[in-house]
Length: 132
Image (cartoon, rainbow, N blue to C red; front, side, top):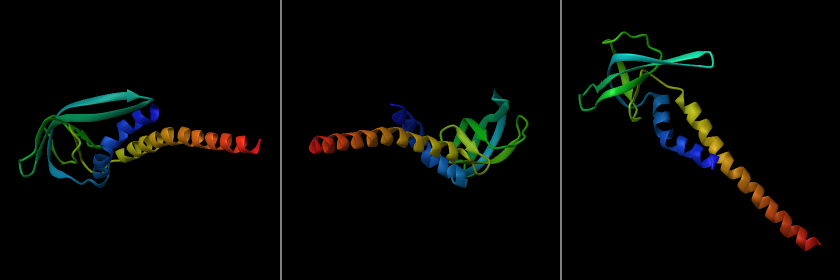
């Protein structure tokens, strides 16, 4: 069950995590509205909520979060990239792929390791019953 949950968390985000790592997507402008911060394990992580508009004007997201280490003020504009992850835009390459890939590998391991143990156990039982 743990493996399936980890796969459900990682697989849908894999493509956008790769695009974010490469800073590939639709370029545009992000206008900062409100800063929000989370404190955990002695670390503070902050992001800005605001509006993203693509340079060609076709893509507008009124409630997006900007990821990237940028010092902004409300109303300030900065170039950003929409990589296809709903509600998230980026100022440059992201390292989210590390967590996404880790969850993917752990999910696969949680599924394959018990399966391999079961297969090995069945083979041992079969070979033991033939020997005895």
